[in-house]
Image (cartoon, rainbow, N blue to C red):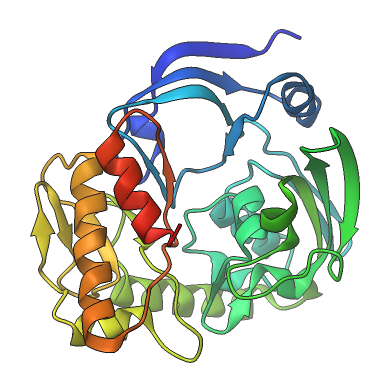
Length: 301
């Protein structure tokens, strides 16, 4: 297949953190068929969508990375929506509203792609992408095969799906939305956007969303705030002054700045509350021993 591939590719401008080093080989499939071909032929590639919760090492990554942003078809059939993995969630929300379909309003401010959102069961304001999901087509990276999984098969939980446990790559997902009035949908979308603007930094301040997952029956942001994390900095990375669970790239931060700052935040909560926070950020890199050691601590390995 005539698939675009770039060597020693710097993905800085594709990431919401605006941080990246040289990726040995980067692939850009234009269709799900090309994506499946790559998944079948490459050995252990990393698949990325909108790179909104990803920290790519400034020291680079020696391996294969597949970027899915060109796999972006969306099909509507009455209340059913089928979206490919590379579709931006914000775009899916807007397109659904134009069809007078409700159920995606809470995702209007999400920077993620459909594939990543299903993989991690993205959520906000007590709603999650799994609420309206019927099924997902996935690639089993162990058996090199394509499968269709129902909502029950996907075993959704907070920031979890079976895809993380079984090494599945989401290819597309089907949803069943609800017919509604366009003005009511727009009102819900505005309400959700206003909430995100009040509680989260815009991408004008480069960031990758929530840094740590919420512990059960608790809030990572609250724990970090009480631990004095707001305003902490390391190199060019800084904890956002309005919410302690966000790191912004304030001054040309490098990946080790972010990881060292994450470790400071992690240690503060551990010392004050004896709680080990788990990162929501996905780190990609293998060329820095210091970064790998920090990541082992953060991942509790």
